[in-house]
Image (cartoon, rainbow, N blue to C red):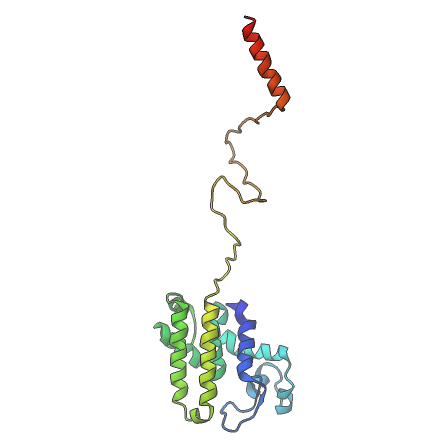
Amino acid sequence: MDRNFARALALVLKSEGGWSDNPADPGGATMKGATLANFRRYVKADAGKADLREISDEQVATVYRRFYWDAVAGAELPGGVDYAVFDFAVNSGPGRAAKYLQAAVGAVQDGRIGPATLSAVGARPSGAVIDDLCDARLAFLRRLPTWPVFGKGWSDRVRSVRSQALLMSAVPSSDPRGPQHPPGPSTAPGSTPSPAPAGAPIAPPVVRLPFWAALLQILKSIFARSST
């Protein structure tokens, strides 16, 4: 869901950290997880490493939304699943994350999340999709030659993603129509009753007499009967 983007990005950035230029990392130089290649693609075409190190929060959000979140249809995925796929995409590429999601739900693995994949995702409990995706992701990472270098960090990351994604999946999505009230004659306190249907008979108003006026009417009726 698109409302989860800000939260998902904040969680991803905790894992990505700040500046990194590890020669063993195939992604090359990164700042807050944004690679130099993506920074050049979406922000500044002629940027160098010095520019990347000065990337603003707004520019970071632009890179992550356009290259990762939108690429995996984050706005269309259920809560929790969106974050799990998004983090996988940041760590291992949008195409791979999409294919692993498709494998988890039995969809065609073409790397493009469209209506068929979204339907398959919606047909399964989100918690089950998250668990299967995280299991497959960790198995993939274990097969990489760089596992001895980055394995512990990756393992901790996937464990955290699973935990946070499951929490997010437990939050019910809000109904865009707003609160719905069951039909019936009663109305909630403070609400405005619905108007009567056209043509429906209108009951005459009930006239309530004050106490003393009502008592006088009773006494008059009694005396009238006794005099006859």
